[in-house]
Amino acid sequence: MSIVKRFITESIKKAEIDEFLQKKLERAGYG
Figure 1 (cartoon, rainbow, N blue to C red):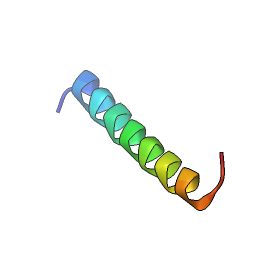
Figure 2 (cartoon, one colour; figure 1 turned 180 degrees about the vertical axis):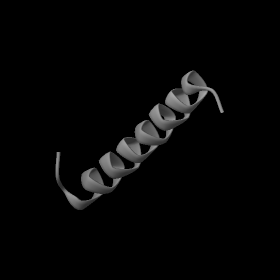
Figure 3 (cartoon, rainbow, N blue to C red; figure 1 turned 90 degrees about the horizontal axis):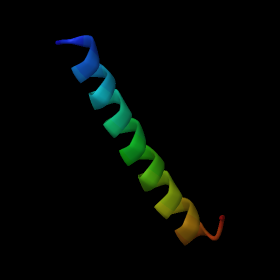
């Protein structure tokens, strides 16, 4: 896997996790 493709994949994964956590926290009453 090329470095660029790997970097993009990692960024997407991180963004999805951030979004997921944000929704969970909002539902729990944080943020």
